[in-house]
Length: 444
Ligand SMILES: C[S@@+](CC[C@H](N)C(=O)[O-])C[C@H]1O[C@@H](n2cnc3c(N)ncnc32)[C@H](O)[C@@H]1O
Image (cartoon, rainbow, N blue to C red; front, side, top):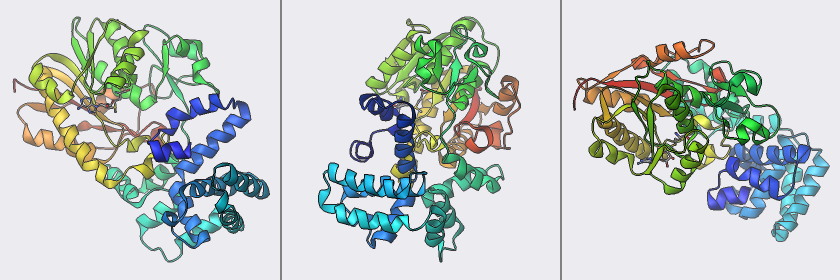
């Protein structure tokens, strides 16, 4: 798994279930393998600092396979309750099997050094002489420093920087799996408990969610509660007139499209889905199969839709391609893979998609700008730029008021500009979704 993530840019959360099945791991063995994989990936940068300290050389100077083996060993020694002798001997044995036999002596020595202290002692050692608050938080909570800075800036928009530590801690805890009961196809009450906020959500029972008959039949799906609220903010922003046309502009892999399709069907609206990557458009088709197989799924660049279909849609979801920094809980490798340089090109694309979506919207229509990132440059700044550029054409809608009319329990939302809503893992146990509803005032 570690090699696949490093060499093939694999996503651990997508690949792991297949690997577990192939290795026929179930029960406690599957749980152990999952914790070993996710924990090692999530705390990779933290373990790398410790390995460098213990090995007396930089990670770049260590054979990549031996380094992965060391990371696995470090997580067992410092992040799991594996007995030290078992962690060391199994990891050294793995060095042989992983075709890094010539490094066995080195791996053995480094692991023995690491095993002499616990994680708190190692962390204290790494913190020695570090005075900068961002650097300290980065070391203590296994986040890259640039990301700590970005998250602090995101919380500062709400004057809630004091929540930074709680957020960093929440990023390191695997989220509880939630299901969405697709309206008209299943009821959340039939799935078990209810979610706190989403009126169509239910926490998944322990074990494989696919074992749930509603999930197996496509009447319910695994979906973060924040994603459910983002889709509902659009579909329930105001009453639906029969015959409304809806567009999901960046629909792949189709989670929100499935919920929007169910909402559209119940209200007599017609949904179109668009996605630029053909393989992901296919995933959207599959996601819509159980809800409404007649929905049109197009492959196209969302930036062209405005010119191709101006003034055409009553509601548009722009769930924009983004850094995904709001979903670090479920993408363990993401924080070490992304860099600060990833943000600017995405922000440019987000702005272009937003302008195209606005042109495709009918005057008076509703547009939801959504990201699963709280980064200010991908969220508030994108909306601010549009509102500044086109004050006569576009107006913000009070997204927080819309969500207040939807959720089962009131959300504790910060006071962001333009009535925008920012959800948070530490405050709401959701991904950090940003949602801004907008309306178009006139012909552009
Ligand atoms: C955040 S994801 C959407 C998630 C989806 N709404 C869901 O709930 O399953 C963004 C999607 O936008 C697609 N995308 C990226 N650039 C695009 C473009 N120029 N036009 C249309 N889609 C684009 C990506 O391939 C990706 O599937």
